[in-house]
Image 1 (tube, rainbow, N blue to C red):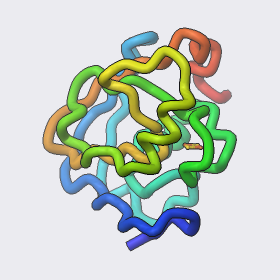
Image 2: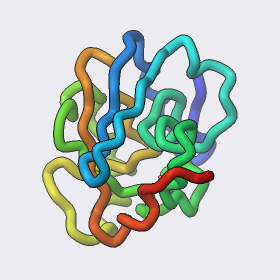
Image 3: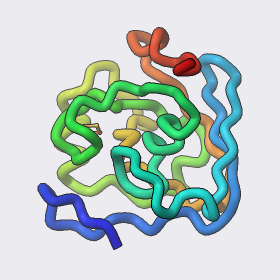
Length: 135
Ligand code: FES
């Protein structure tokens, strides 16, 4: 299982079931299929919401490359949050640096839903320009 080279914590297990990620700002619905996750070279934890966005061509800011060393990948997980493991202390510390926190705030590179329910995310308002297809 992948490990963050900067954090001494086990990576969360990738999703086991197909599920969807809806981006509330735009209404885009992204399909996540565990069969298509392995071996993909994207930043963030395997199966993370950051990787789902990047695979879909949505270039969410992720200044540290998805290794839990910034807070630029901050998003809100408005539905399905319980399907991802709780953030580790290091993620909580980084989130404290992000503006406009909500109870649903997560770092997209670290948040890995298990696929048991569909997920709805929302980008913080200052990220709205990033929620577009990358082509
Ligand atoms: S990209 Fe830096 S913490 Fe997620």
